[in-house]
Image (cartoon, rainbow, N blue to C red; front, side, top):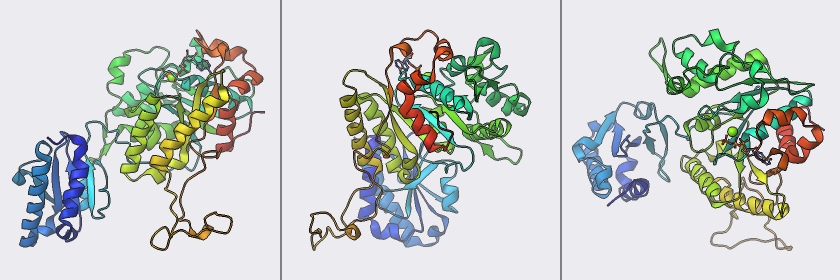
Length: 449
Ligand SMILES: Nc1ncnc2c1ncn2[C@@H]1O[C@H](COP(=O)(O)OP(=O)(O)OP(=O)(O)O)[C@@H](O)[C@H]1O
Ligand SMILES: [Mg+2]
């Protein structure tokens, strides 16, 4: 019996076997619907050529027999559409591996497809703090980074987008400073065109830093109100006056632009939700982030999770659009055997980056005539195919971790705000220094000493 993961390999196999028919089509869409069943969508014009129609039917018939529960009877499985654009509308799509004129369109029950990567924002740097597993010190590190960048004189805007488990704002703001509204309120009010009215009442300044400013936008306001009833509506797309549909992540982007315009920060730090989650997808792929920090604990669960994500980017052929913005952060690095631990973390990260996101290192002439080496045994530079890859020991590479060190004063804290209000620059540097320096350099900010 065929299962979901066999759909694409079998489809590739069948289409390659019928290469001659497929090549006659301007384009062909493999539409994988909400139930994971495959249809063909072919160009309307191809219907005019009877022989071609019969051949396409034959290919679908062959595919349908192989995919069985994941396909339709031939009469229900073949659709026609006027253009490729119309056939792909409203869903993520990518070229089927190795076949140029065939696109896979994936219809998902959620909007988080992870496969469309918004281009990097060119204005105020946006930095996303993400982790595949929760509870790895991501919010703590973000709070400490904002503290340190603000102390150095930068204007920092912090967003708590961990809407399903909010908490960052209480680390940065005492109860009496919490603003009246938060991101969840805005996303709900925006649906009834009431968002503009609350923007000014959802930003508060933290009193933790002395020399700079930390502007905090919480997930909810001082009074969380009917949080669950609101949260269940934040994902709603908005129907616009012209009949088009604005996704919830496009609405979020609009909010971010309004906040940036109001605060005029030097940098925006975003606490994303952890895991392969809808909010995380919006933070990582839709908001034009310039730097995406991937917090990681050494261990199978972490790397299996990142591998799933990276493979999706590889499959959807968007690796090039996102890989330069990624950076691994060693989360809560243990005191004991620190160097060995970090080395292991770097090796594990290198393995999955080179398997999925880095280009293979291939000598251009590795074919019939054999490799060409210089006298010193190295590849001649002009014999190497240009590629995007790194040495394992390259500190500037995405896989090479910046470290956040374990420190007893942060372990099992009852109040992070209490801790941050008494901390000094030396302590922050000793725990978070490598992360803060990296963030500050990458966003061209005033550097904390
Ligand atoms: N550098 C550190 N050293 C020791 N303990 C830490 C450190 N950073 C965070 N912790 C502790 O780890 C726990 C989780 O921290 P935090 O809430 O920042 O993680 P998180 O990744 O944001 O979690 P979540 O996924 O739930 O949002 C807390 O108890 C915190 O005090
Ligand atoms: Mg957190």
